[in-house]
Figure (cartoon, helix red, strand yellow):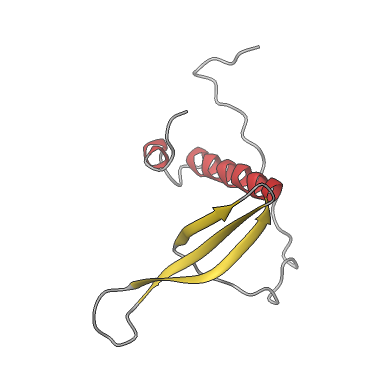
Amino acid sequence: MATSETEPKQLPALLPIKEEHPGNSIPVLFSDGISSAQFGSEVVRCYLSRFDPNMSGSGSSQNQPVAQVVLPTSAFLQSVAFMSRIVDQMVHDGIITAEYKARFFRAE
């Protein structure tokens, strides 16, 4: 049965993380984004980077790799689906607009 355009679609629930998990023992890494990726049939490697100031104090910020994330291809695809659900929830909650989302997602 097709839903009408006016009916809101059911968004998946995001499960809250219990206060005791993950705790303070997990390191925090700040990244401005994913600067590059390499992939094959078995794994996807994503390089996280951030814009750091030039250490000499002159010039502009430099995009520096800060971490490499390696995932099996199936886990990478699950991660993309998970992130997509978060984006949909952000639109639903009014954190971002559908127009802002559209700037980053091409129409299928």
